[in-house]
Length: 349
Image 1: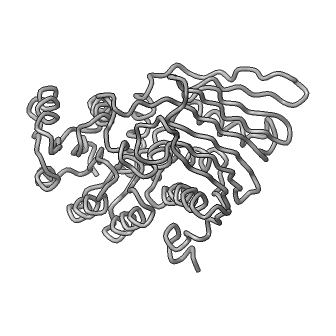
Image 2: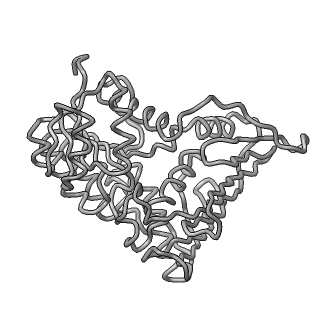
């Protein structure tokens, strides 16, 4: 690939697209080839900001402008059809999480991309937060020893009717799991460097919820390396605020993240009190997306290996499916149940 800017089409011009369009605009390695949304109002608003960029209503119209890459900022419904169209056009794909609204559909997307030889990356931007990277390093450099158990708390009042939020989660069967917990499950795997092995879980919806599906998740995960973690997440908390607390207890101490975007603390056992871990300044939502985008570009140019691949993402989606199954069955679920979808034929043999 030459050093010329890579052409990219943005499909879906809703809430998340606003973030992506800003970081694309800031990245000299990219140029907008097309904008796409079926909503005329969304097209008009975005076209006014990016004068001269074709703004169309359908994916085929966008692909007609022959972009080298496509950013799917669309709801995770019918993603396989979108991935298939992009794969036929030979366009690399960066898709918003979750890749699809079922593990089976996501696995189909991965196979479509792999069969076509097209790169498929999932937009797991929280991996690129400075706090995530610092925590991952702490848990791997021996400072506090080996992680053995932890707790992950995420409690939020998310008013899904607000105009700046996407509306499709309001009618999803498990909006917390598919739209929010998927980030958390991916972070667990990324930070601890292991995959989930077994889960016990319960999902439910409080009486005051304005979501159709379950917005509360309680789970106990066991990972392949023996790590255990209790998880509690809700989008319909009783207070209009976000409470976040992710603590990991290790053989020689503790690491605690007390804010979704920062406030990392650590201590060795004898120290008795947690001390702040220095973190760089950040632009909320923008810097992590920009870093993910830079990784995507580097992989396209062949200067870095792919990160957040569709194939890897299947293991996080399997945790979502396992939670749903465990809650429905009222019994533990082993993640090996989903191996036929998450693993390649070579890995299965």
